[in-house]
Image (cartoon, rainbow, N blue to C red; front, side, top):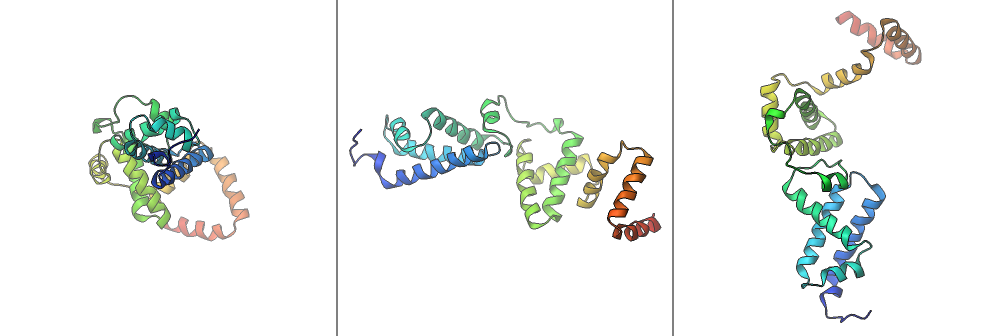
Length: 214
């Protein structure tokens, strides 16, 4: 099909947009779940293209320039619009966001002790973790806070009122490490400890040191 070279369909900026959109789409196909940011970016670019084109040109532009269908383009645009106004879990699937109905949790009375502990863990890692851990934890804390309609700072204020003694990274790590062993018998624990000591003799001195302080 021959097109007029002066139409918006073939101008360089929109050709570049097509490359960008297709790249985001290919990333989604490759990685699947957890690619909401790619879907959002593709949707935002599609919305910009749609705004730049005249009425009736957008669907033909999709068919000629994109490696996916018009219906898929509409899904990406829906993601972009929804994420702009609603909090989202960056690890959620595209399908779950599209099919989620109702409003996000906005009332802190539904904020449980488990939620408070999770927020504490993220905050502790965001403050005291390694550089990579801090960046990851900050992003997760921001998304978690937004799910309650709050900023991370406001959420942590509420956590402080709910639990005035936040745990340190070390305390959280210890509790998480102990969890799988709580159901074990004393004999089982002793056998596991002995096996570890045989495999890691350097732990013996550390254990003796700990025992002297307890």
